[in-house]
Length: 332
Image 1: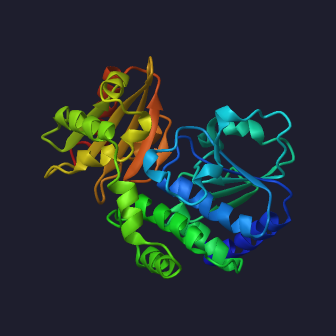
Image 2 (image 1 turned 60 degrees about the vertical axis):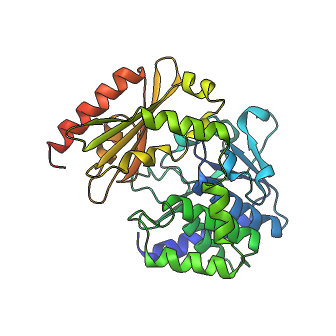
């Protein structure tokens, strides 16, 4: 989108936010650092204007994000009865389509305007107002620009949330989505109170013993295919129970699939329930896996995306490997 276009959209979104009586803030199912940081960054800004809002998500908050300012305001969809919940504006953060918010959709009634803020290239433009920037490293970057455009003072709490969003969605500024622009924004957030050392320690070096033991077992089970160019890892409910860990402890594990020399594509297969497998896909540099995800009803970024298959793990692994082999034709 052209910058001028987004300037107009930001202005419309700010007017909607400042005039709404009750605002719903929601991210994608099983929220990650960018989703949570972006939601909380916006919420903290609205809080300063005494706006009425609710943050509702489907899925468990990973333990490493419980330090985020305002995290106690995030409610689970399972805790709230939709009856009597009336919102006139819903802000959907980092969702490529409306289905990504899961069961929180029941809170969006007729007459509720939808603001769609996202940086995924496959976004379906499902909102009444769609703020899309496919060059942005994270949704947190887009929220920062929105708040700056609205003349909102970036407090240390807002800065911490938005820095966390950018830090995590760039893989600690390692992914090729990292740009000079996002680094400049991160620097400004530091100047406004974000503590990079503390945030990095809390997100990446504050794991539970169960999480570390799970990581060890998962790494022992790494599988390599296509001359070690493709790496698969698997997590089952039995493994979670054996290590006294939860699904929230699996975030980030997929990145281990790309650590071996010569590996270009990695996939994490997670058992959701009988006959349902979640697949997280990762790739390096110019190797794209978005087509594999899209072929199976998923989406995301070129180098980081996912999908859910209505089959067991073993069948899912065969399907994804065949898709990778067929799609890339041995070109990686």
